[in-house]
Length: 208
Image (cartoon, rainbow, N blue to C red; front, side, top):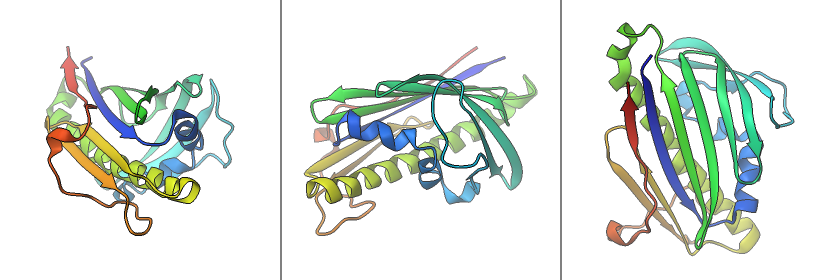
């Protein structure tokens, strides 16, 4: 079995105590997942989150319907939690969500270890799956930053700046600075020099 690694980092303005509850509410996962995946939570809501919690989903990949069951393996609010696939399209899927205090807010780190089915034949699909995961996390990052910005507008009168960094499967760094808009938006990009936009980053590597 060949294990692949994916990582993304997002720098968010709200403090960790405000960021973590958003991810503790499983219903928000539908809000930050690309609609093209037809992602739905099957387990009745609300879901009491904690170590050992089982959650069922359904989605479509390349038009093919899948069922996905995950288990919360670790639950340590507001620092981190880990979910793992119990049943689904991957041979292995372990997703670690980490939330670190940062002088400018919260550094959210997503680390995924995954393996494809039908090894070694399944490795032929590795570049496509890596691109798919990158695309999903880019979409998630845009939505998370936008929703955090909207939340800050409602509760703190607006954001001065939220900066997103996400390095994905093609080794490209996505930097989307957000500044205070005239009214709340899910995304409000500002052009500028990306070299001045913070220090968070991400990486991806494969191991045999």
